[in-house]
Amino acid sequence: MTGAEYAIIAGAIFLAACLQASSGFGMGMLAAPVIAIIDPELLPATLILLALLVTVMVTVTERQSLDLRGTGWALVGRVPGSMLGAWLVAITSREGMAWVVVAVVLAGLVLAGRGWVPRPGRTNLVVAGAASGIMGTATSIGGPPMALIWQGHEGPRLRGTMSAFFMVGSAISMALLWLAGTVTEHMLVLALWMVPAVLAGYAVSRYVNRFLSRARLRKLALGASALGSAMLVMQLLLGLS
Image (cartoon, rainbow, N blue to C red; front, side):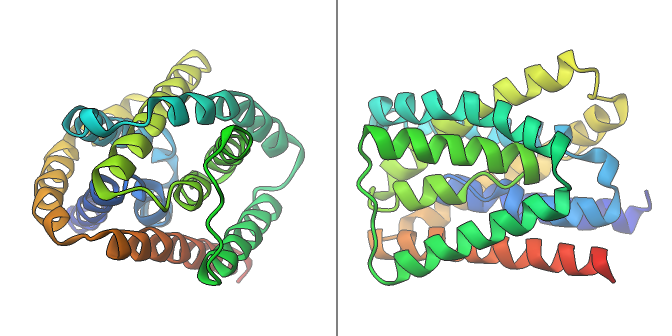
């Protein structure tokens, strides 16, 4: 890659890390499309490693506000959801699966815009966790289902709970990718080079968080979902052209 391409990826990682640390998700939605355009061979391991770093830092920072019960039930769905996502990828084209994801996310956003706030009960958490596992495995964008189910949480609780969920999910994904032999030296080297961008994004998020009220955080979470869907649609349309 050229120096300009490294800079573009670093900029995307910086913004994605700031969003992830502020809202509890968003790393894949903002950074994955950019990386995919420049060097798709870096996905998904590079981004998962960097997301793991962010989620560890946020989980530790917001540990007093974690919804451990909710995280546990969401992870009950996440594990089989990830396995189902891998199976669906094997039998369905990535484009077809991505269009399904776009439809599901946009439908959820419309409902949320109309005031729909799904109750974070046991069943809904398991279903959202499973949907996140499927979407994350198939498209690298697994945040929207969890943002919808946890949108009513206060800032620290939302960030901490989302981060704890994705921290465990990312660790599981990395372990599976490592066992499958799909983690290359190229991925690890770039991830190492991008650590300063992640740390800078996290540092800026600590300042941004001071201005995020519950209403603003909800708008940020739902807006990030919409942005991720829009970027995914652009990817798909570019792939068809």
